[in-house]
Length: 258
Image (cartoon, rainbow, N blue to C red):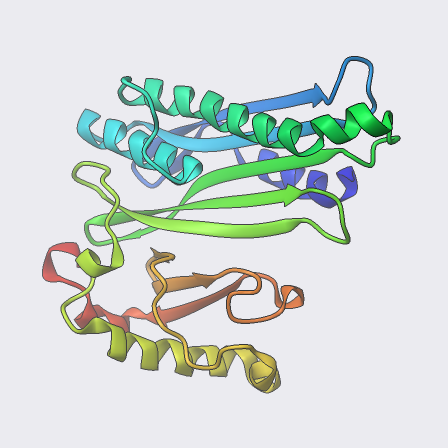
């Protein structure tokens, strides 16, 4: 099972430590857990978590807001904690691990009691890594990569992107980031660029007319929408990222974010 996720984990680890995203100084929260399904069992779950977070070069308001946004992205909802800033992020890490462990034990607990040792066939691996990935104007992007191996031919992998206000670290959704009436214009641009980058494979896609899906990041080059496996194409295509350059997209962005 380790052959699926460990190489990607090592690459991410090599790229981390204490880094700079231009003037923003960041550090990483890194934790690895291995829990057996039962005492002495070869069946176990491995959880690896690596999250980049801001430490210096930005306001306290941004640091606290960004940590809350990162925690919410990891959990899929607002964290159930009364803490602020780093405390929120650290508490959410524990909440994430608890959720994964509970799901694992609920899935295999009774089966393991009935059938006994499976020789590792009931083992899972869960991986999450988050990094700041680019910025433009008054916002900065954060990208969370997730991978989950629960048996079968391959792991499930997906990317969740978000755009944060540099003022307060608050997540900016696409309806707030783009001007009114943007969906139709952006859909045309996304579809055209998807066709250009797909080439001869364009006809094999499930969906050939793209719509903005809320999963996006920004960079100096443009705005990039992320389409995860099975969303618009088969698993073999992987995660598909379509970038619309600023020369075409800037007029669709609200002035306060340019």
